[in-house]
Amino acid sequence: MESFPLQVKRLNKSFGKAHVIKDMSFQLKRGEIYGFLGPNGSGKTTTIRMIVSLIGADSGDVLIEGKSIKTHRQEAISNIGAIVEDPDLYGYLTGKQNLEHFARMSKGNVTKARIKEVTELVELTAAMNKKVKNYSLGMKQRLGIAVSLLHNPSVLILDEPTNGLDPKGIRDLRNYLQRLAKEDGVTLLVSSHQLNEIEVLCDRAIVIKSGEVVDEVSMRQQQGQPDSVMNVRIEAKPVDQALAILATYGNASITEGTIQLEQQRYESIPDIVEALVTQGIRVYGTSYQNKLEDAYFSLTEEQEVSAG
Picture 1 (tube, rainbow, N blue to C red):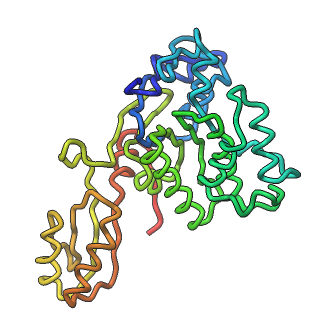
Picture 2 (cartoon, one colour):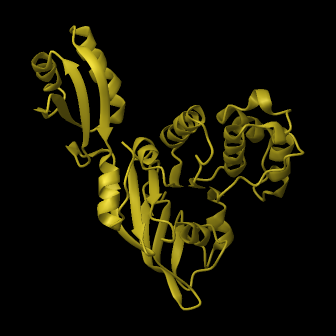
Picture 3 (cartoon, helix red, strand yellow):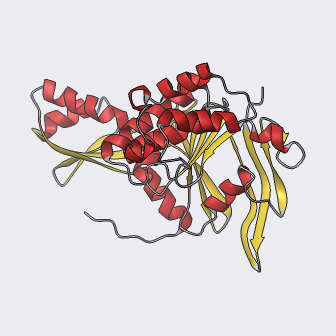
């Protein structure tokens, strides 16, 4: 079994005189979630379309489970599932009918048992007999993912999957995708402009600019060493007592009456707040500085003003 189920090797693509994708290369480890980031016009969607063979590259290659999309296209594509932009669903059919339709189109001989399995996997069993036109946007996204998983792909590519979702829909989709990677070993490439969500969802992020990879940023600890640190701001009193407690969680200091704590995991913030409250510390607020955002703007040299 390949260690890197998806390998992109020196892809190039031009439209007229515009050289859009320039020697694009990266590879994804099995069972990990990768963000795919870049400013508008950087080439994210064009790259995804080449990976899934919707358009051809001028040069370079894509290997899926070691199979080239140039020389073994059908074998390669059989290992990949994708949602590029909006899920392509039939609103006048029920969720079940949609899955049955796409199952018939698949050359992988999808069974009824597999349809039931993916339905349960995306938690849509209760809605299968409802027409898709009556689905919420989040339900449509999950049904789209179910369609892309029917043939048991080892690689799943999602282009802006959280577009239009409310906070609950985003959280549910995030939890589902993380479970898919961890429990089923599926490798995911997620293109998005939502940097906060990418930092929480993904293990790593590939940052591109003007059709080229500029860096790969980690959101997790690698081999026990923190290579991505998040600054958490905590307003709490008494400050000195709070500082003593927070020092056990990482490097902590006081700036203008607010505690600054270096922390690797977003998920640890509720535990930190609970530890303070348990010790009688009054917590007035928390916020964090997105280190991925810092890296992204530094790498792409984009200047944006964020609302306070």
